[in-house]
Image (cartoon, rainbow, N blue to C red; front, side, top):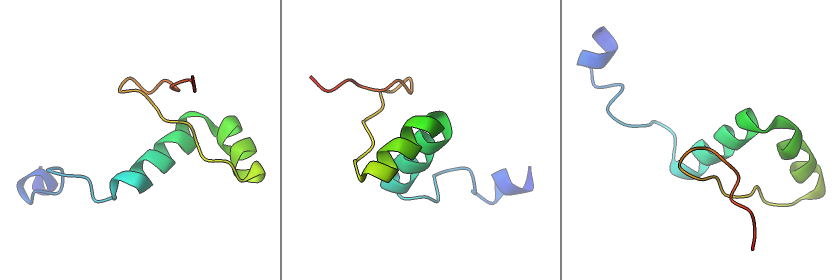
Length: 55
């Protein structure tokens, strides 16, 4: 309750790119690990958190 009153939940404290990176690494750890070791970028995620396939 104190944190809410202090406004700590009003916005993310992470920049959007860092948030997306952490979300992907948490949601898809095995894919993130292989992509990271290959030096490849992570694929984009949809609003529901699913990987958006490259067309």
